[in-house]
Image 1 (tube, rainbow, N blue to C red):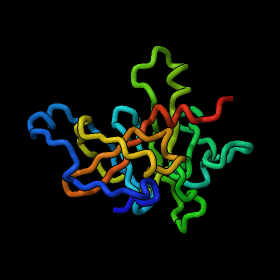
Image 2 (image 1 turned 90 degrees about the vertical axis):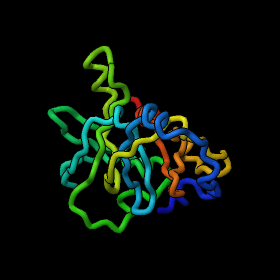
Image 3 (image 1 turned 180 degrees about the vertical axis):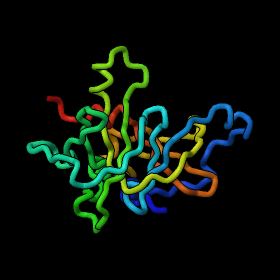
Image 4 (image 1 turned 90 degrees about the horizontal axis):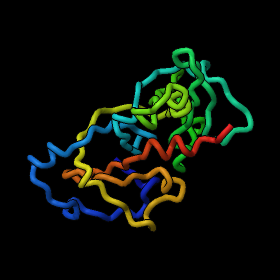
Length: 189
């Protein structure tokens, strides 16, 4: 796996990861959904911020004009309007429409910024569809092992959405994104 397009100068080794006993890491672990923004760029979002994984036929997302280029359009999800965002494009990667993808469907994550909102109206405003390359698996990660990359090694577009990164014991680096920051970036009506 290569995250070189997001964190270009990554030179950290697994030895730089803080040591934690296996018992304490299991107790303090969080669940994250592992997905790909591009075939070689893997990222994570906290499971608690996600509601559903969707497969959407391309023709069912209605384009909305005069929006940022990373906003694909709107989708009718359970009778409500769900804004659909090209997550890779938002964080500075190649836009979905420029990828050599011939698939007839989108894979999307339904992001919810706050699981304990006070009213249903605020919950509607905090939902967002994130189009990704593919969903892979669930990862358990100890929050104490999440690190901040040096500012010089992160692309500027990624910075506002980056919670940190996790360097697994096998040397694989996974980018952890902040769902609340992604929702906050949406244009306001």
